Image 1 (cartoon, one colour):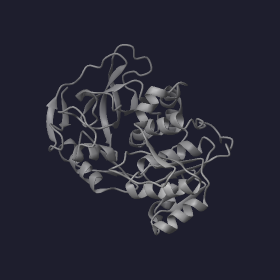
Image 2: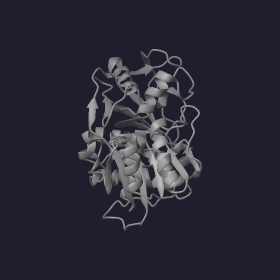
Image 3: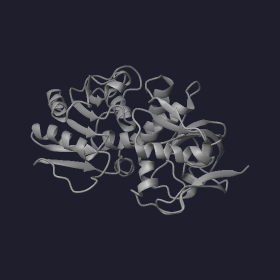
Image 4: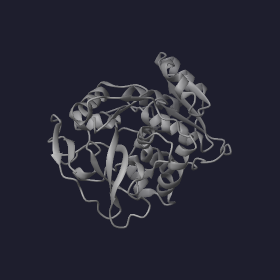
Length: 342
């Protein structure tokens, strides 16, 4: 058994395909035969722009799905042969944890079993932003947990989730609406049919002129929380106007500012590494429940709708780089995946 990986040797350097070791999992870890790599936009920002400092050389990639090949000490909830979806933590340092290879070491705390009958690709794409969602909405905002069975009782609070067709936004709309909150979100007409199925009470066209968009956003409020899952300067500025009209407060963002920004008086952008917020501030066992109970049961019951998938051909040799190029240029309403064995 041999292993092949896509390695980035230095910041912004061209990717290289290399033979690497087949790793031995440590305590609370297991080895996965990787069958599908799922991409999220931040990976292109790391590879192309070195947006987040990491040690080099590195094997990138944050989410994937496959079959358990071997288990390390103290692993009790996974066994050889299980189908799993995995999300890597940013805090996991070492080439063994990166998704851009055929055999990957997974931690048993951010992985879920994939129920029989569930498409592994769907599970791998859905899990890719799970800790961001749980860290932001479940821990920092303290929202209720979503219901696995039935319909949650109405909470009587409204949440604006800007960017309902995005990778983070589409999962966020489902998580928050399944917890009983009224969700208002945005999308383009192209993706309205998909976004309308996620559970929002109202979907607003974000392609309209900015002034009209802000007017529509305000009219659908007021909101208890405003979350911008796109977090570009122009989207934060518009969401800040909505918050200012309510008397001030926070725009919760999934990216830090790209540079100096001026927001209306009384409005601030709140950004954190939401996955690390979950790890550091979770006092209720929410993360464990999410990976062991909510995610596999929601998959089995068909309660989570994945984004449409676009498979990028070429495997590790060509597909990974092509997928990162596509992400860097910008994709809308789809999740890119690569088969590492192609």
